[in-house]
Amino acid sequence: MSEAGSRYFGATVIAAEAGTRLDQWLTAHLPELSRTRVRKVIDQGMATVDGRAAKAAHRLRAGEAVAAEIPPLPPEEMAAEAIPLRIVFEDEHVLVVDKDAGMVTHPGAGQPTGTLAAAALAHAPGMAGVGGPRRPGIVHRLDKGTSGLIVLAKTQRAYDALTAQLSRRSVTRRYLCLVHGVPRAPSGVIDQPIGRDPRSRVRMAVMPPGKGKRAVTRFRVLERFAGAAFVECRLETGRTHQIRVHLASVGHPLIGDETYAGRARDRHADPDLRALVSGLGGVALHAAGLAFVHPETEEPCEFSSPLPNRIEGVLCHLRNHSG
Image (cartoon, one colour):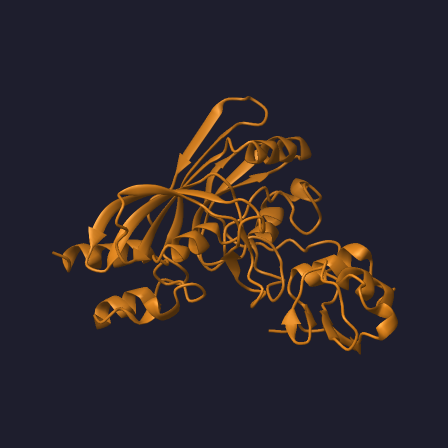
């Protein structure tokens, strides 16, 4: 879906330009854009060569048709919005929120308002500028359709400390989810690189060796049902859509995931179950546990969030109609 206010560019590669990298070619043809912005357009799949998304390093050939969608620049500052938040913990350094499914973490394409970042900024105006003007206080993110715990930094010092912990993989993030099918192994580790799907700029995908970024998900089956399972996942890395992509890659996409479930979405023969799934308001994924070291006191902090009613209803139905 194109973003309102986007403009479009298209041209054909001439013989003298053959062999030029796509990012260099676009930078030369769009001098009003910075190299960083050109690279972002490419990385988001908004530049195509002969109709297919291409990498920045793609070497162009004479006669190839290059097209690009240039989204408008976002405003430098984000407006605060007085949206209620479910606050789990707060002091002068950090804010831990239990996010509802349906709320976007920070502004992005197609979602400029109604975000967690804007709500947090209204709650704690001192967060303005912490970590960046468009993502004040945002240390990590949760997908729009995912509910649960997320920590925000209220000071730059706290932001730096928390992002360092994420880099060291010392932040514990525990998720609960419902998946299609029943994994054969009671537990396991999915260690597969993830990158943007070359066929769709809104999807991520498991990539071939040597491509994408390393992603590691540990899972444990908590309960088995007829055609579904209740699973716990722990992240060692934090890639976009990581749990959703990893579980789908091993044949067990999340219930309610319209992006990655494919034909599995149509497996529910029970009309009551279909109604419960359609009412999830997102995917059957909940960030139930979060633990980190406090950036100032250096004391361990651990928080938990109960399974929300939207997922609990599906789980109860599966328990009552299995076996």
